[in-house]
Length: 187
Image 1 (cartoon, rainbow, N blue to C red):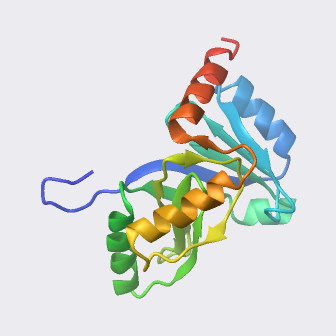
Image 2: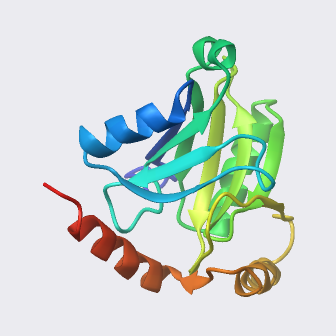
Image 3: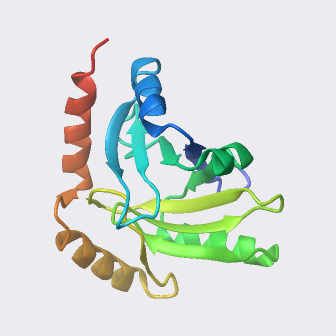
């Protein structure tokens, strides 16, 4: 993900949208696009119900739907736009660029399977920059972490969180499970 100029080029990997009828939309994207539900959840861990979907066993989710009231869903269809970087160090670089633009980091969390920070772009679109961890835990999860800590400290804290969570697996084991889930989808 380093371009010819040596500049870090984050990869666009997933999009989230607000929807009014989560069940209807889930069926649509499963049946029409063949996406696989990889996780789902809501309260008490998150204030709205969410469905995570993917067509790639290497990506926990490529598409996220967030149930919202019709007024909120109609007012702001894009829930977030997410960009993958390859490491905590690249996250720090991106954070520096964003802060240099005068934009505020709104949220910095570990999801167990990823470290993320969120901010609004100049036109107020909600953006996520994230890096994968070597672990998986069922989503949604959002535990604050400090990107100013060393990589070893962040890894240790995140691993402890993951191992203490029901459903913990290595990311490689989760990819194998997702491959099997996706292989069993009707064609």
